[in-house]
Structures are given as structure tokens and as C-alpha cells.
Image (cartoon, rainbow, N blue to C red; front, side, top):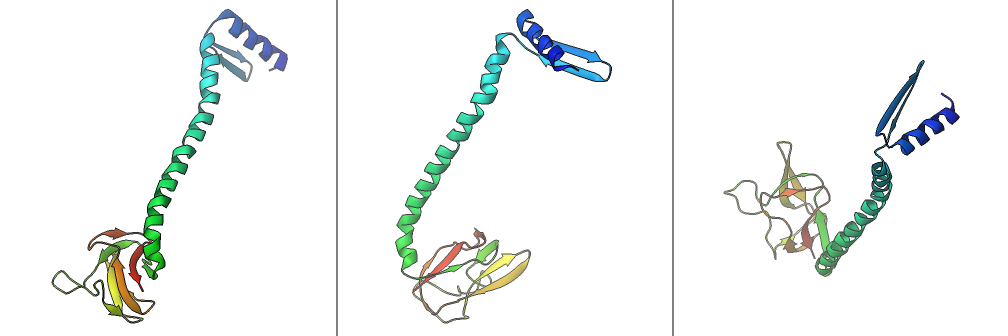
Length: 158
């Protein structure tokens, strides 16, 4: 279909106030939708709303990490005082081999390199997590039975 013909059809639709026009010409098919002043408002909604939504979403996202950074900043001094033992996998954190056994380590315990700190159950497999550094357990950052993510801090060893 000719561009001049399309332009004429669009002008006719907008001037007449009809809401929809469909034209079939051979294999060509054109559908023009207009609801009077509605499309111009709708056009503003379609083109004006995505920009504010996009700029609105980053604003809370920027504020949320800033708040998180503030809370992390409060925890950061504790983390800076020692080595942070992190989870090497996603799974469930356990402080002991079974509920009746004593915990592998407690706050204040001295650990050696290679000593078991905890168990992380992943896909029905129990994985012993060993100390990478020797020192004293300053803080245990997970609760028994809690789900943990990859690279999540588990212990602080100083």
C-alpha cells in the first residue's frame, strides 16, 4: 500500500472521530485504531509512563541499596576484624552433625585450618565446611537449619 494512501487514511480516521478502520487491499491489510482524544492521551501514557516508571524504579532501587549499605556499614567493622568464612554453595546450614551432637564450633572456640565448622546440606548431601584460616570464632552469622546462599558469610574468625 502506498504511503500517501496510508497518510490519507490516518488523517481521515483522526478527523472523523471513528475509533477503528480496517482496510484490505489485495494482500495488504491495514488497521488504524483511534478513539478521538483517547489515543493522544494513550500515546502520552504509553510514551510518558515508561520513562517515569523507569526513573521511579531506579530511585527506590538506589535508596534500598543505600539503606542496605548503611546496615552493612554497621556490620562491616565486625567483618573487618577477622576472616569471613563464606558458604561455598546453596543449602541448609547445620552447626552439628545431628540434633543430639554438640555443635562443631561455638563463639570463642579456637579453630585450626581444616577443622570442620559446620555442615551444609545440599541436594541430600551433607558437605562439611572446613576452616580456611586458623583463629578464634568471633561470630556465627547463621542459625541452625537456616537456608544459606552461595558466598553468604557464615563465620567470622579472628
